[in-house]
Length: 219
Ligand code: ADP
Ligand code: 5GP
Image 1 (tube, rainbow, N blue to C red):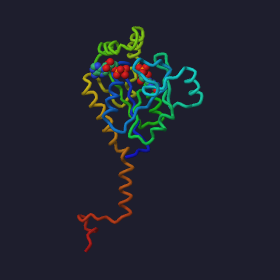
Image 2: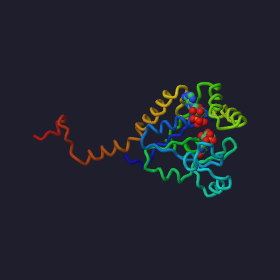
Image 3: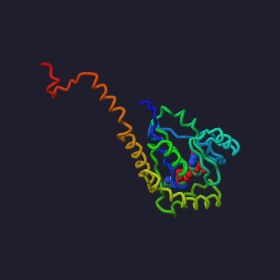
Image 4: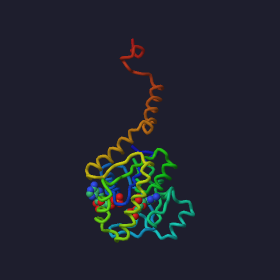
């Protein structure tokens, strides 16, 4: 079913809690759900490709995009600029849903622009596990790990902005919960109301054929 208004699913967490891992699993399981590729001034990690995880741009390029009002939201995170371009959303218009891996500042801006966006916050089972996961990723130096770990505590202060809070302890279990959130949100009455109203309008045009209703019998 083509969708003029895809379900917007925001996923945030302190760095290292597992949102990239969980998002990849969600996208692999739910057909028609796509990932919003942000712009960033951060340097690509060894396993990242330009245009896949991010559009990697220089600070100058990013600032030009800000000046041209090209972003739906943008923010400075860990000393780099990150943003969701309006063009990225426009080209996903027919999709079932769009997943945003963004921080709390971006989540707030998207919730403001689209109040029916669904925001999920991922927590680690403990701060000690978070630190282990940050180190285990082995994609950053010690200074970066420390900076991100300290920033994690500040990120958690914003959990109250989110509709759901998911503890990522066991990966299978957390994946199932995230998929369940998306599927349940698809059934939210406000999202399906237009379809129900369409059926009602059709029913008003055509005579009812309900044989259990005395007035509809053809005597
Ligand atoms: P984030 O995107 O939130 O920064 P990642 O998805 O990169 O976090 O996860 C950080 C590290 O933790 C990665 O090495 C990932 O494989 C690992 N990880 C994620 N979820 C779990 C989990 N439930 N159990 C064990 N390790 C996990
Ligand atoms: P990373 O450098 O680990 O990929 O991401 C660092 C942080 O930036 C994460 O919290 C991630 O969610 C956030 N981020 C990524 N893209 C965007 C974006 O487009 N906008 C905002 N506001 N944050 C983003």
